[in-house]
Amino acid sequence: MSSTYGKVFKISTFGESHGRGIGVVIDGCPSGVDFDHDFIQNELDRRKPGQSKITTQRKEADSFEVLSGVFEGKTTGTPIAIVIFNEDQRSKDYGHIADRFRPSHADFTYSTKYGVRDYRGGGRSSARETAARVAAGALAKLVLNHYGIEIYSYVAQVGGMKLGKSYKELDLSLIESNAVRCPDAEMAEKMFTYIDQVRKAGDSIGGVITGVIKNVPAGWGEPVFDKLHAELGKAMLSINAVKGFEYGSGFDGVELLGSQHNDEFYKDETGKVKTKTNHSGGIQGGISNGEDIYFNVAFKPVATIMIDQDSINEAGENVTVSGKGRHDPCVLPRAVPIVDAMSALVLVDFMLRARLNKL
Image (cartoon, rainbow, N blue to C red; front, side):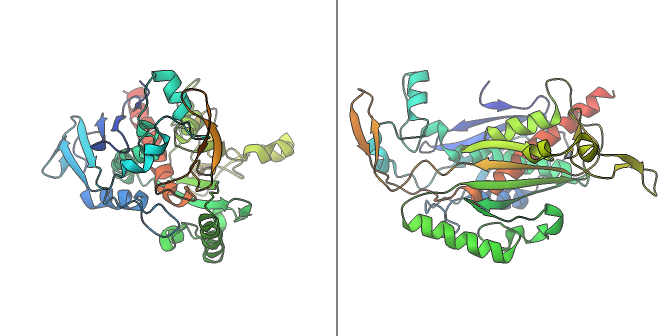
């Protein structure tokens, strides 16, 4: 089903941007996991709107309620239901596009597929749905924390403004030190200023988020069609506004010879198998090899802009679409925890599948 992800650790999200609320049902979470309410709320706080002047000013606390699956602070092994009630809907902001197709939105495709669409903020196609994923991803992180797995994501590019540094050159503990979520203070300030300029012009801008996953053991992944990198790609491409995914050397790797690109094996002083380089991005043959997993996710400019655009309505007539409401001029700062969450959901599912393979 299109609203369900995972084979063992399964999540199903529900709800719309301007409905009563959104939420997620998590099935397959092991029992006995400490359900850290504060940690999950903090992850949601990283994604919620209204964090700074370069994000949408919609005011949502994104406080969540647990309806099932947790008893005395621990998961029970039964389905966990989490709901986040919407608090600051302004559906009237969307009345002007009730019969109009906004450029580069899902309005036309949803209308064509279903014959009906919720025009209030995009309904089910709204990025507000990702809050449910972040809640589920936070729980997945809690499971992975027991195994020392570390997940990081940060803004590496805004428009043509590139950080130009490898993640190994950065202090990833600084990701949350600024509103852009770029772990380089100087570049973060420049990015913030640029995004604010774009916002004031009523326009939007895209960019790139880099993901890094450390301490994944060798052996996670399912060939042939469920390769680890393929699932990561699918997970990232399922996020609103994502237009591209690359891992390891990615597209730059095509410029290297095989003799330059191959990652040679050796044993370190503890006898652990390592590679001298990591062009493979920690994945070979679709299975983790124990090295760092790293990847880039490209986000397009937010489709809603405060500039009039030509379009058509449901009757096929030429119309002008005017941008209204509260929207992000750049989705990247709030998308960082979403990339984190999807990484965690992919990894926890493969972790549990790896266990099943060895029963």
